Length: 533
Image 1: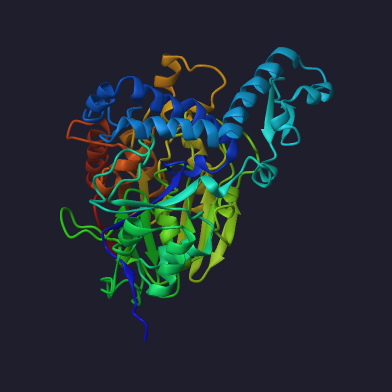
Image 2: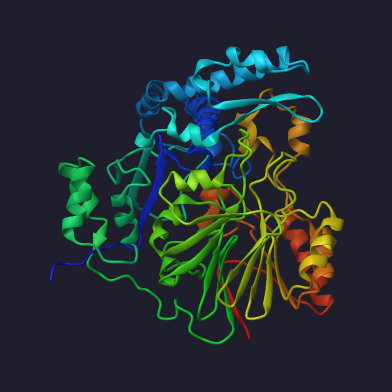
């Protein structure tokens, strides 16, 4: 029998796009183009001109999550990435420029009359990829025909890599401001996310592979000498510590909190995982569930919205072989700020993707999954790619509202009329979210005024808004989650709380109010589970 090999428990796999940590907006070509030109290059060039400022800022908790590169390697590596970006991404940088040109042309020339004659003025890179439109206030705009974007020369898998390293997974640089440079301890594998060898590599977190398959990966990636030796050092014949209770076989509905917005809901016949952001197996610090606690099969993965802390390729790729279907918010708008999540996943190799509209539901073994409206947390932008979810399994009703902000109580009252009361409510209370520009700044056509940016923050509910939802749905239990406070999340959330942080103060008030009303309530952190029977 040939030797069986597994990824070591502390082997970190990071998906990369042009050496930056890959999040959904770096997959769709138009959003990637704008971010590369207006964000990545500006950070890199700022670092080259003043590395000492970035070094000091990266150590400041107050500036955590800002546009400061956290890096102490040779300056030449940053300069090389600037040159590589301008050369290899020249078409995308041109696309970003052409998007701005198209927008300016429409503002200046589309005055409410037919746009038919304006198609000939569309920049060449965008010809056949956009539709020119007015909104109902006669403001000109355009939408992408997104499927054609992916089949054009603008989409290329050559920018995708997998970075392998052995390190502390809880101590990593923030993904939106710090690219990943290859070092003597890191291997960057030339593997697109949709490649079969990527799936084989990722599955070795929990399933065995052979030396021959590792040879195939090393040969495909052209690894030689020290890099080849380093690559093989990430694997061991030691079997992973898969937990005996990872497959639920009991009565009732088991609910397991994995950190942030990640919740696993199981009966003996069905498993549902929401917003998977999974910790590596770490035997130190706070208790946590890890990849080794996931069941052998995950029937449904539910994704609430298209932010980097809810759609994490690092996790999704490592559990892809376990997933039956992925449920995502339906979006066919084609607008720059709201790319289709279905197309992002499809073009990175995921299968069985189901889109749901608000209030649609699908049957499952033991019950159903229903999509619910999701207000807030998107800076008042017209974002359709967002849903909350209601699960009903074995008669138990659970609501997962993620980062929802209760901006309109009447909407929830209408939802209540349709679905009735809820037994268990999970709601996010990140009520002091980042300014709108933190995620969307590179996509705007004009500079954002500071007053606008500070007003239109990416906020969830405060205690009063969350309490209104709980009063309405009359749950037996309520849980605050999706706070991004676990240590293994800092590199994607940049969150750092203390007892005086507004989300902590507000969620403490919410918990106290719920308990006073006889509702079991807790702010979740680390790991947590219960069985509803």
